[in-house]
Each structure stands twice: as C-alpha cells, then as structure tokens.
Length: 183
Image 1 (cartoon, one colour):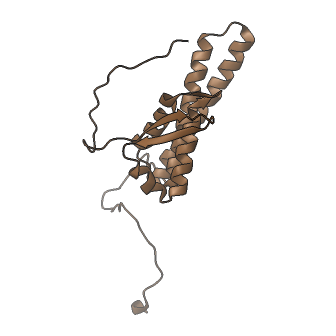
Image 2 (cartoon, one colour):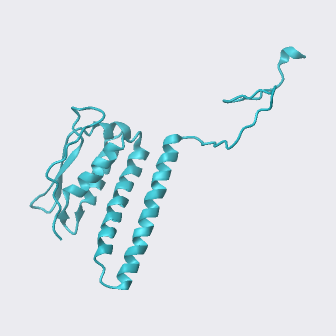
Image 3 (cartoon, one colour):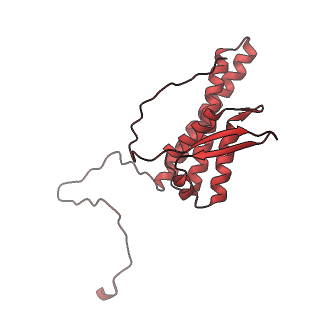
C-alpha cells in the first residue's frame, strides 16, 4: 500500500501562536533499539501528569503505537501524541484515557481500511465485528471522558410548573434542623 503524505496544512493554533506542539522523532539504532527524540513543548503533558516517570512511560507507550513488526511509523506515534496534547488533558487519568482513545481510533481506521480489502465473507465478517466493537469502545471512552470532566451529575428538568402566588427556587437548597433561637 502506498504511503500517504501530507505536503502542507495551514494551522491556526487557537491558544498560543508561539507554542510548538510536541513531536517525536524515532530512530532505530545499530543495536535495534528505537531512540526517541522529543521536540516541541512537552511541558503541558508533564505538568498534568505531575510525574516525569508517568510522562516518560506515556511517551514510550505512544511511540510503541508507531512501531509494528519492527517498522517505525512516526506519523502514527505523532498522531497519538498530538491528539493527547490537543485535547489538553487536565490530569494524569485524562492523559492515559486520551492515549487509549488515540490507539482505539488508529485501530478503528486500520480496520476500516482492511474492510475495503476483504477477499471473502469470513474476512468481511471478522473486520466488521472488530470495526463495530472498536467504534463502540471509542464512543464509551468519549462518554467516560465527558463524565470525568464534568465531575458531577447532570439533572435534566423536563417541566416545571409554578402556580400563581407560589414561589420557585432555583439552585442548591439545604434543609437544616430547627433553629435554636425559635424555641
């Protein structure tokens, strides 16, 4: 399969025009060890994990997403790293979940490509099942991220009726005990 190459994209960064997003360069050494070089601003990720070991481990896991069968795919790793960075995780848990989401997305796209190249019905069925499971997993992860970020319950009020002469209170209402002064 031919490798897709993007020649140029005009990007207008919404936050800091001078910030360089993190990007990794992966080089295989003579001893068959992949050496990672991180360029750009990795401080956001390091700040939210609040632990250099977690940041390093996360970057290594992201790098492994781009190394399959001893082939290095920097684009796959940089996609995942860029996704995590762009989603601006607020803490280590979000950074880990976002990394998983990037991995699931990449696998989903790989299965979608495979679906286009099936040669028989069993291959089609297997690819379709995997694609559906991955899609549901990503959707579940997105819901989990939304719930985690909201850190609260969402109460949906369908209908409120206030009769004439009555009062409605909107907000937090605390019912305390009897006031000692009223006895």
